[in-house]
Image (cartoon, rainbow, N blue to C red):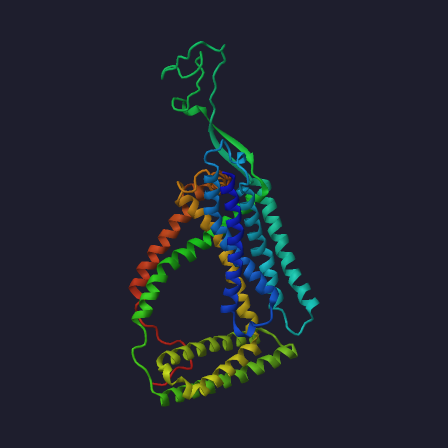
Length: 433
């Protein structure tokens, strides 16, 4: 028995290392070229966040394996080298909440800060924003925990009299107790024997519960819509794939036009950058920045469309056009500070993944209750959440699971009805007919 538990500990350590290495590769492979060899702190936060999210998902099978390791023991503590799963669950989700509400916002505020400011000023500005967030979150958590941070368990109050140890036992359905008329059988007890046992939950469990609510809302929306859109989107992308190509001369013409548009965007970005340096960052300036950012996105859509319509075998003969276009687009992104925007998008999505990972575990422990029975996950996400005062009915009646299925069904119907239509290119700078 001890050898099996030791193997489980070794597997858990190896899997954590593999997950961390995979997320490093994921970041390096999918980061924007402008973020290469810089912004190491946000990158570390991204890798750590993705690793925590993946490990939290993998902890459910580890919890089940930990339970199976002690299936012949009287209690889990009787085994050698068992994993303290409840403590690990609480630790990983407290780290999850710290990353989502403090570390990731700090990285976003710091990385999005004015590049002309010193490092100290950017850190101070980020700490002020995060400190304000911490005070608000602390007040909300403290007030809610003080007022309704309790669990209400429904129990049955049973009792029986005592008697001397007899030579034989005589029980029947009409006499389930020991020499007395007091009720001691849960099957025959009256409804009046039900009582409510109230106790205060621990603060870490309450933090996990509130984080689970936020994650469950996001998971029901993004998961329900995504699980329907993903297969249909792949099918419709195949149906709408380009079935015709353009010639080399047409490609050169279109790439040249797009290059001119990129130059126009560069001039506009230069003008906005000069206004920013002069300190005139009013409403009109922000509106113009958003307009230029939108045009850059539309220009990228046109570039992607052009690449799909041109046979790649002849790309070498006209690569100059796309090289110029790519260079100009990079200049525009750099002037607008899009490197920070792109990395912040990465950080924001990691925060969403971390929040949703909590609800994924809750969803799985409820949907696969037989698989997760007698585990620490079921104790936290089952018994505690379903008895927590103020929010227990959300989980007792599977509100989020029903919302997930409902959104998935509605999205499937809507996307199947209208998603097959080919969308017209949205960019202002469109390919000439």
